[in-house]
Structures are given as structure tokens and as C-alpha cells.
Image (cartoon, rainbow, N blue to C red):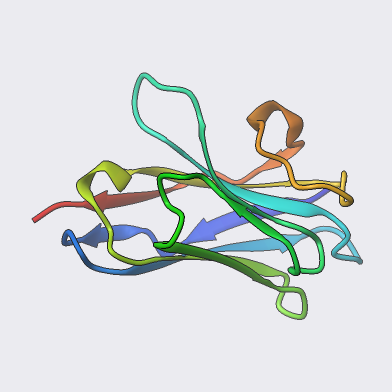
Length: 125
């Protein structure tokens, strides 16, 4: 079992930056892949980024590539998403996810076993 808790969401102006965090607990090791998704009302979860269990390999959606950076600190059991040059279309609830399929990055929401409760990010002037 892995419990995930997101934090760090909020209101930011277009062009601004924000970092959201995902604290993980419940396992004695960190051998699980993790990812970030976002969702707006009426739409499915959208893949944002994923990171392997060691933090060495990452993947990004084209819409955020070059603006967002995913990272994880396995000592603190925390994953981060640094979001720069934010746009109004980045407004969504951001969710972190984890899965014990540690050997590959995962982009499909249904392939993740564990989810956080989400944190709202609003980009508006």
C-alpha cells in the first residue's frame, strides 16, 4: 500500500511559477514509478509527467515539455512538479499517482494503482 498526499497548489498569474509536491508513505522502499496527471471538470485525467523509481528517467506530455520539471527525493519520499511559464490552460486539479510496476514509465491513468486526493492549480490574472 502507498498513501499519497499532494500539496502546493494555488492561484498564480500567467507566466508565473508554482511547485506542487506529493508525499508518499506506507512502503519501506521506493521501488515504484510515479506520475502527475491533471483533470478539468468534464474531462478525463490528462497525463502530465512520469518518473522512474530512481528518478533517472522522465517523460512529459508535449503540452508541458520545456516548462515543467518532475523530480523525486527518495530520502524524503516526495515527488515534485516544478511548473514554470504557466498558462491559463494549465488550470486543473493536479493528481499524483504511483504504481509498483517500477521498471517502466506509465502514461495511462488506469495503469496506476495509487492516487492522491488532488490539489487545485489556477492560472489567472
